[in-house]
Length: 107
Image (cartoon, rainbow, N blue to C red; front, side):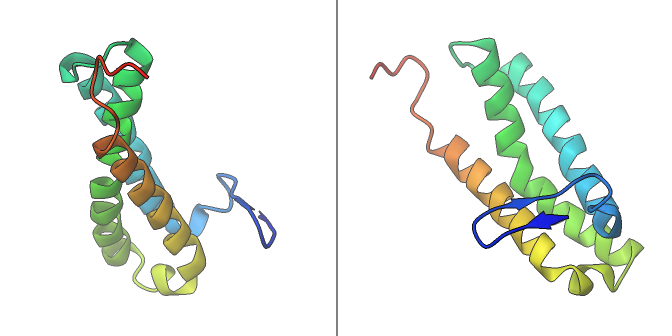
């Protein structure tokens, strides 16, 4: 894991201690992207994909926390910084999608 004061970067190997959490979030993002394409009324395909994935991220993070805590009980406490960062990114993505300008909004 490469970590500095201003940024962070995690590889798939770094996520090993919280693998269940990561898999739940990534899986929900893929599912959300598919649902976004099918049901989100966005002006472009990419925006529909992004919207669906972003909306699904934070609820999936919460579900992933529950699954991870049952699967490997101590892993959340041992990797507190990583879990907090993943949670903040998930929250920011979901909030950004919620407050995204409506379809058809012209700058």
